[in-house]
Length: 93
View 1 (cartoon, one colour):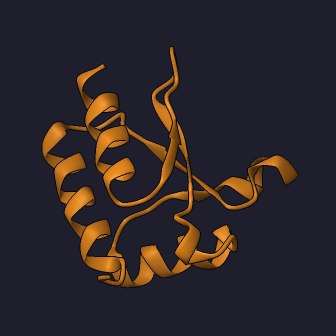
View 2 (tube, helix red, strand yellow; view 1 turned 90 degrees about the vertical axis):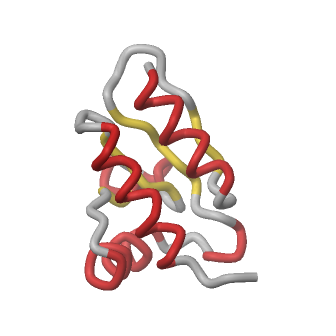
View 3 (cartoon, one colour; view 1 turned 30 degrees about the horizontal axis):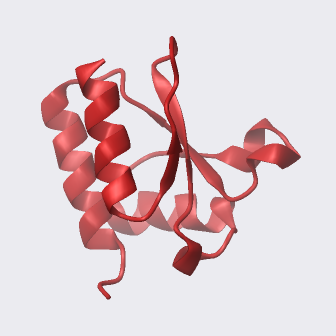
């Protein structure tokens, strides 16, 4: 729960809309409005440029377009590293 809550909060602070799961070890996060809705392009760029692996939501069907699926089945240290990388990856306001 602590890892889930940390990741959900960190992404929310970055402008993602996050659906908090009740029993899974991953969450769905809607891309920030200023990032568009092309989840495949965003996930690819995040992997290559930001060094954070996610799954485009559209891979799970049309309802997932504009979302990313992120796993929190890792250490808190790894989640904090990923949060920092995502923060650095996103353009600053």
